[in-house]
Length: 194
Image (tube, rainbow, N blue to C red; front, top):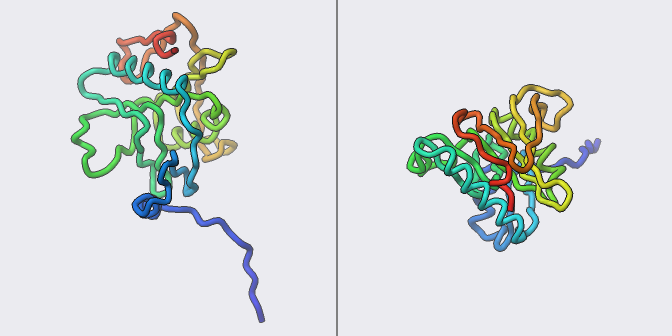
């Protein structure tokens, strides 16, 4: 008697992902590991790079001592996820993470041009599940020059990874956002915009 099994997807672990990188499988590609899947990211345009740099500068000024900012570097969000957010503000000191990547952040900013739907749904649900308290999406296009702010992660059975943000709002122009971890330091939306 023959037993047939339906084909299934292999979900990669962070360890397997590292081994693939070591042998050069991702050479010349921007990739990240999201829930066991290797996601190939679009090449970064100059507008995206400028927006990411401005966002990083703005939060560096706002946070100061006791925090540091990482640009497109991994966050170890479990055995099968290692996203590389455009900007992540981490509590502590860089030297605290010499032997492993941070497993959380106090603030994550994604710069969205072609990736807006993905950043809102997939990444938003992943970051909410990881308990990231403050998630901002800096939208760059000719119509929506704004920052979407997401806060209060909570379980949501309808969300991709069963978590979402309860509170969402948009800031534009001279309006300000106050990082949850730095309530005395507001950042103007325009300071995040190219």
